[in-house]
Amino acid sequence: MNALLATLGSYGDVYPYVGLGIHLRQRGHRVTLLTNPHFAGLARKYDLDFVPIGTQTQYAQFADHPDLFDPRRSVSVFFDTLILPNVRSAYERLAEHVADGQTVIAAAIQVFAARLLQEKAGVPVATIHTMPMAFKSAHEMPRNAMVPFPDWLPLSLKRLYWWVADKAVIDRMIAPELNTFRRELGLPPVERIMTRWGHSPQLVIALFPAWFAEPQPDWPPHTHVTGFPLFDEDAEKALPGEVRAFLADGDPPIVFMPGSLMQQAEHFFAVAVEACQALGRRAILLSRYRHHLPGTLPDGIRHFDYLPFRQLLPAVALLVHHGGIGTCAQALAAGVPQLIHPMAYDQYDNAWRLKRLGVGDWIIPQAWEAPALAEKLAWLSTTMEVNERCQDLARQMAAGDPLLDASRLIESLLSPLAAAASPDYRVLP
Image 1: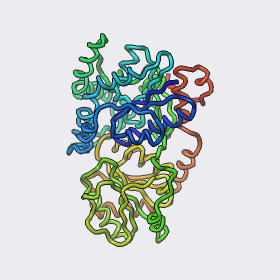
Image 2: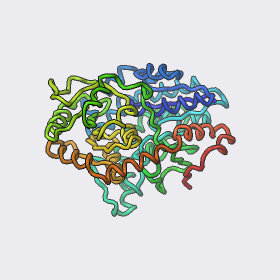
Image 3: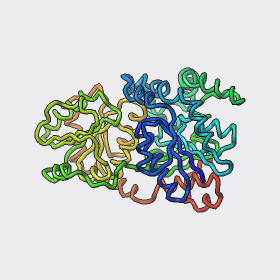
Image 4: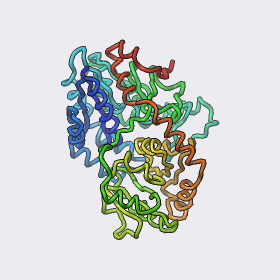
């Protein structure tokens, strides 16, 4: 099989496809990762063929944009910098690597080129969703920073919300560019792009467990729920000696990580240091951007650019982070309580799900101050019920191999025998 894996976004968007590519390659398939050239080195590190979509400049415009984490403008930043400028180039790059009768595309919903090739050339496509919020469900409305939806609202009203959001916001942003290109390809225009058209009618894979997000009646047909992919770069490398020495030198620390792209976390880290000092707790601050860290760190608080979570998290007391789905999954696998500082995208929804599961809590940015943070940290790190629930879910995650299951599902697009060998997935009618 010739597997083309396509996504656009940050490290959290790309890592699951690297993990999936490794599994597919180990099963004997040719695998090509198609994404922004910022991740070319990552693909080479894991022996995946690589094809660039877009430019390094576009990624820098995305990563450095001042509204990247603004709850109202972040989505338009994502589409305007990475997605819409590359609709044509993504289609061309994918089309160049299609081998007749042998190719399967597994792509994020925002890589519209995959669905275009499915319609135009009949290439089998699996849509991959790494987060529950990608399913625009009226039965279980996602949580966000702008529009809180009580569960008791009538279903008709929630469906109306999605119709208005599609027509007035999402389609207005995406459809002009997409439908112009569709006309050039001889395809009719589409609407409700992110709610309906973007999902492959052949196969949709949800890379998270059903206990994190129960499948809903209005999810696309042929949706299969596997589990969290849990790819962690350099996961097998031992922690540096100075990190091991710090971990062994006292009580398990609290880890603070505002996200791989966050470059404006001065207040996040200043409050973290103040709260840990008030509690007498040790801490690790993780960020590749040193300019937003306090100039001098007190004893018991250390900074590191990056550490593999698979090695680090089993040795810590608590993880405080932005709520990205990959980070949530790593902490769940390690059995570590989580406190979320959500800003945009799916982060509020993930925080709500963790709190509902009893393994974490959240503080909105407007309330991010030392007294409130210290209270949450003390409660999460000392409550027996939270710890027991974390350990229970960690045991559930230890069973099975979601990336292997997803690989078999992708194979099933070409091979009925592979489908027959797959586990019993939840398939929605």
